[in-house]
Amino acid sequence: MRGTFRIALLTFVLTALHAAYCQSGTASPSVSTADDQAKAEDDSRYTGVGKYHDLHDHPLRPDGSKGYTVVLSDEHNLGHSSSDLMPFQNEHEYDFHFLACNSTAIAVGVLVGSESHLSRNKNTIFTRHHFKVESVIKGGPGVVVGGDVDVIDLGGSVVDEGERLTVTVTGTDPYEVNGRYVLFLMHDRRASLNVFDNPQLIKLRVNDGNIEARGPEYVAKVANGESIDSFRQRVAASLAKAACR
Image (tube, rainbow, N blue to C red; front, side, top):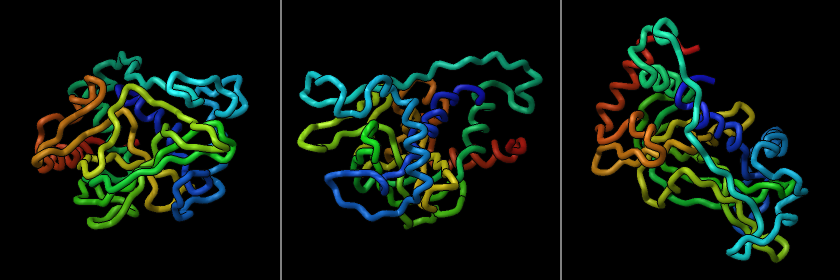
């Protein structure tokens, strides 16, 4: 993993973990596969569960729920030489290219709703966000204008066996219903076609046709105040500048 987006892309490991094999107070259609649930249970060891068997074993939090907190950080180790960066002029161009390359598709989507799900082994919670695709910046399978895509994030709150269970994620702003966002959609081949991760640290809100970065300071270097058309051109130029690895 390289560059500024290392921790953001690690979020893909944590959150491409799909809700159909999860339990929730909200009924939702089953669209994932058994492989997704196996990956979810394998990767839950990264989420800080530690010595506890499941979320019910955690001590009570001040709000009366049980669970844990994950702190997302943009810490990373850089130090590329000028030859490593070629043909890019700096780390930010290099990292932007890496992010664009590792996105199955890049789109502008409007959030229409979300629901949280408890994993089958009850040791973590994921939230499924439902987006309507408004425009496509980089095309990819399962992403079409007017279509629906789901983004899975670590975190959320559910009631199970009479107890409120909560996984809190700090270091990133939450999505807002009816908000428009630039989504770097990353697909795991074991997931259903329209189920993706969007790196959880990177929240690019679209207001009045311009992109507003929310989250860690470095996210503003991805896009802030830029128009969608300008951003689309920058993505195309970055992808044309060097082959994806």
